[in-house]
Image (cartoon, rainbow, N blue to C red; front, side, top):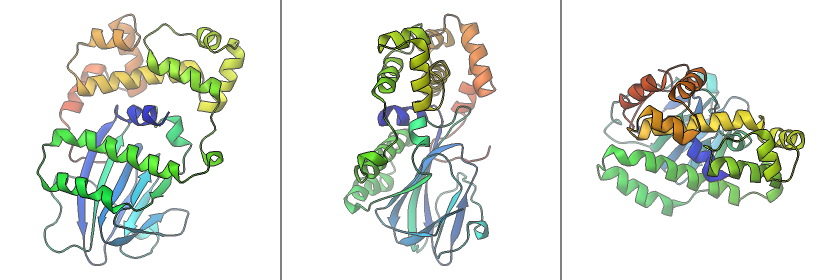
Amino acid sequence: MLSQAVAGLRAGRGTIRRFREAGDWGLRYSGLPGSGFHLILRGRGWLISADGPPVAVAAGDVVLVTSGADHGLSAEPRRLADLPEVVLGLDPPQEGPADFEFLCGAYRLGAGGVHPYLAALPDLIVGPPSPDDLRPIAALLDSGTPSVTWPALLDLILMHALRRFLDTLDASALPASDPVVEAGLRLIHEDSALPWTATELGRSVGLSRAAFTRRFTAGVGQPPMTYLKRWRLNQAARLLRQTDAPLARIAQQVGYSTEFAFGAAFRKEYATSPGRFRKAAQRVLPVAGRYQD
């Protein structure tokens, strides 16, 4: 489930940037429709949320933003509303001495939002420190490695941080797991191009359509056919970003019988055509970007 949740983020616009701060600094992040993280590389600071007390963070910590909650980072404890809002650009990190250094990465999603598994986790998670994790990442940052590696680095940090967090929890604290729902999700994820119906999915896991739909909706937060449609379009968006495959081939790969049907469904979900979505994705650099377009 975890790997599928992170895989679902790849349909979004990946951005990553290194920040270096000194003195009485503060930054507020808001308006992110997706998931992201802050990896603290050096120094000490405070994670600021809208409705909780400030939380101390230090080198080695990973702050996970599972569902785009507004938050901030600051040199001292303070109110979120008092922090200046950051807008990510293409400018490099400031030169000179820095008290606090961190890597900020995110996947900006369109319609559909994050995977239900991520949405069921706390909005903001601080992972336990692990200085050994910083060495290969810091070496990669300092090496001038081409930007094509950034999507892989985004995935690596998100997966590793989520696993570190989940390893600290008692099983009862994890999002509820229904074996029937897990089996249904596995069928969808393994071959979403099949002409699935709720009846067929239910039959495959030994339930009637009504019983399967009821349990799936309770476990995932949406009916199976809604989830299937969004998963197909999520995969299509990823293919549009990462490949130059013809639209007709992508439509077939994700389970649409015609390019026309695929285009209509995609426009309804993403408010743009597949072709325009691809062109917009090609204009975006993976190493920087904005929470707001």
